[in-house]
Image 1 (cartoon, one colour):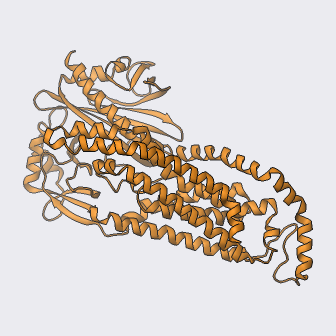
Image 2: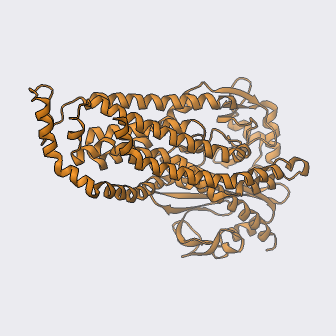
Image 3: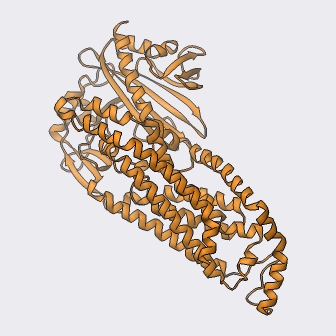
Amino acid sequence: MIRFAWLQFRMQAAIAAGALAIVAVVLAVTGPSLVHLYDTTVAACSSQHACSDATTTFTDTDGPLQVFLDFLVLLGPLLIGMFWGAPLVSREFETGTFRLAWTQGVSRSRWLAVKLGLGALASMLAAGLLSLMVTWWSSDLDLVSADPFDPLGFGVRDLVPVGYAAFAFTLGAAAGLFFRRMLPAMLTALAGYAAVREIVTRWMRPYLFSPSRKSLPITAASPLSFKSGSTGITVYENTKGVSIPDAWIYSVKIADNAGHAPTASFLNRACPLGNYGPLNPRDCSARLAARFHQLVTFQPASRYWPLQWYELAIFLGLAVVLGGLCFWWIRRPVSGPGHLTSRHEPRPPASRARAVELTRLAPAIQSSRSGCHAASVRETIATAGGACRVQHAGAGLPGTWPAGPYPARHQGTVMNLFECEATFEADPDAVWKLWTDVARWPEWDVSKEIAQLDGPFEAGVRGWARQRGNLGGSFTITAVDALRRWVSECPVPLGKVVFEHTLEPVAGGRVRVVKRAEVLGGAAPLLLLFAPRMRRDTAESLAALGRQACHQ
């Protein structure tokens, strides 16, 4: 039985082995050069006092390959569930070969145990080898990024892809056994895997360990931002930039020794309002630091491996539960035309039953030998691309969270892509005029080749822009607060991207400009992979905006 199961599985195993071999060759060729670049740039940057430029140069290296490898590990378990697990039993029902398989002296349970065990082991081995190679290749990049708990990165490194693959495979097999049709089983594997991954990432992983809490002083480098509103000054905390190395920051709260947040009256006294916000944000921070501190809730870096083991155990446990469900379900009588004899009906002699089944299956067996298997493989390959496109369009993957404390513009689930800011000496009116002159965007925006607006710069007006080297796309101005803030939206498949632009004069004749990007809808997981490139282009563009405004 084991040999027969291996003969049925050898085509999938050969394809997986070939793909892993190609990945191994690519990583073996590019990996040493990446290590050498790290040793000569990032490792030596402290003596040259140029770590920012060194890390940027290093993280930009092999950017498309980084994105491809993360997508490969992310989608690998899903493809295993859809194209290995789902057809495991459903194909037997669709072709009718289950009648022959279950009348050859092998019990249903043993038949399922061999096929399920062989497929699950192969799935875990393939996912484990792929994760091992990608983790090794990305080790220096992960060291520089210093964010091991990133929702995307955590799921494509080390141990957890092994558990994902085992769960996805058994989920597909269970769906095939229940529906007895391949397409519904594949769709169930797709939706079920994505849903469980989202549930574990958002609602289970943060609570596997009780978070730690730490009090940090407020300094000029603290990630605080001050906004002026109808009630005066409001202070916002940002989890990015908190000085706890490699930690998973849950929240940052400004509080005094009694745990109370600063009141509006205190903030209005400590941070006098100017025309565009606080007169001096640094003085605001200093006055806050005299009475308040940052209360940080986080998971320390030492809990990375325990979380990996816990999540691996969760998905392996789910795989065992689904396997047990398969064994329970397969013992049920098979109904329908040409059904097998029920356990409650008198059985004919074994030799007669086999003769009847073999006679009934002769046309199906001959058809299978004449090329039906090759046709099903071509169908599987053709379907794989569609599955990738559906996943990229984005059913629920980790990395989304409710909208933050910024002014409410939309409802629902929002994913923050990035936030960039620049501060330079310029006239606020000149910066605003240049920033809102859409036709002049290509003069300073490194990502724009052509841009135009179909009317005055006001809410509701549509425009069009083309990225350098890419196709164009439309956008809509949704909000304009003259000389302070404007918001635009760009439609994407299954959602939209919202860009918020704010301008804020600061002390010393300087201007601070901030650009924040958020995604609404199912396109969030795909756009998250392009966020590093978008963030770098935005940072360069804001710096160029400042240089251009200075010459106005």
